Length: 309
Image 1 (cartoon, rainbow, N blue to C red):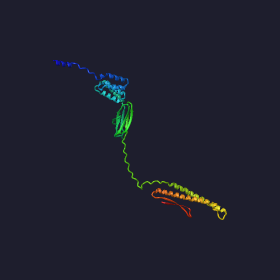
Image 2 (tube, rainbow, N blue to C red):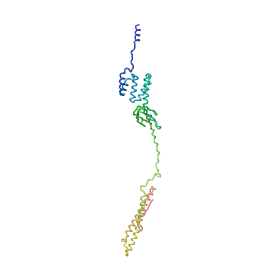
Image 3 (cartoon, rainbow, N blue to C red):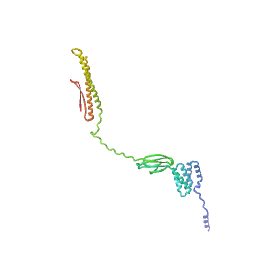
Image 4 (spheres, rainbow, N blue to C red):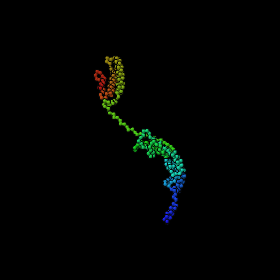
């Protein structure tokens, strides 16, 4: 009987009341709210997150998401609101608040629309170091972001973009695989018959021009020599002596013009021969062409030109 009475007494004794997990951190919660109201969002977020996750009530969770939203960490805020909205233990006002804030945050999240050009293949695309699979509308927080594409270990595309809230930008990755250069066909070496003929080092044109000028000079010299001969004959007739003094009558002028005429004519012929030789040599490089100028001594005074082809 005594044992039965003791057991009944233990069963009827009321158990102690256990406080809710968030109740023990009421002081820390109020400090964090005060920091948030003062605008010190970084310190407020740190104070809210210092409360153990298992001890956070829904008000604390909503404040954490709100601080992230105000700091521009929109993607993280959206994730927090999504969890609260879908929590089956949350009451109706809490769910409605989270759903309303989530809708607002999702409108403000910027997006990078990543696309690949038609010729771009075999690349790995990353946004801020996280791999994405184009085509994709990738949400990001406001600020600067980096889009890169790699083919193997090589970066083949890189772009930096800065987006404000609610903005969207399209990034088309144009990085086609470089075409492998085709092998150039081997060109056979030209045969001696087909090898281009080297141009002549000396042009024949100046020799032809010089020959023409000298030929004209020779003609003029002979004309002047003929005129001097006429004057010589007239002077001899005027002397009225048995023997004409040719030196006094002007024979030296006749000899001078004749010498100039013969020399000019000879050099003209020599220039003509050299020009012909150079012309023949440029057209037939395998044959030797020689022009020889030989003075004529004897009854006929002058020069002869001999060409060997």
